[in-house]
Image (cartoon, rainbow, N blue to C red; front, side):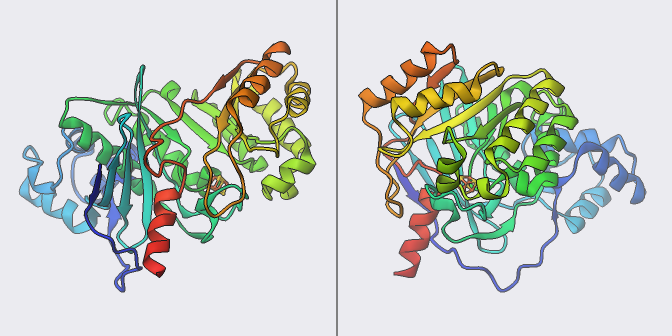
Length: 364
Ligand code: SF4
């Protein structure tokens, strides 16, 4: 099902705007209230309206005075995302294309699992990492998303689920963009969705994934959050990784693995490695054996991802028998491994595909 609501994706002339209220951590909101002559406890009430009742106008915050509601609407933006496309797959996956205040567009995906509903959020408009298999990086990085623009993705999906009395139970930061390239906003986002007065998404139900910005991995380890952490690895050796992911030229595989060990030692948590299987490139049993040696002794888990064919790129899917052979080779060495189930196969579900398609149609 495709709901085409609007097709504009040009940068608007007027790109000045107020701060999104969803960008404010609870303490920041309390500070703002104090600075503006209001009682700090109002912050909890405002959070309740934003994240529990999920209202769409400041006017609806009926237990606040008219003057506070006016102050809020003069200083902050409440609606920052406009739904342009909402595509629903036969398996229940829903893909949203949102337009931002400045005309750029981003994607967010709702996935249905046995264990609940998961939202995959975007952290940047485009991406500058340049992974050779990724449609999202084709136009480069346009800008970072503010924390509130990331939070609003989860809130908007939750509002859609409210219609059927369902709840977002987990969040993965694996959409468009490199989260560690927008570190401070990503961290704010994590805190805001985690508050029990906010959306109350438990830390263990949040996963952040990086392509391997090594200094940020150390920084993130030192935050010591109980969040699930994943590395997009995709290759068992540095030569092949550099071919697939140019970031490996800046931060070599050896240095990445040192940072991974630091993270595991510091947090005591298991790490996940995302390994996309690209037909004839990194998917042989020999590659699996090499990967097993690389990960030997690490507290980790490997997610094998059969990669969709990306029209702009030359990669093809790995046949099923080879996927199972790869999995078996890892298991033989005692590595925890699963094959990721595909979501939204009948819609443009791979990262950046919907946005890339929109951009292409626009330039015709
Ligand atoms: S896979 Fe992720 S990090 Fe790599 S280019 Fe795409 S969006 Fe950026």
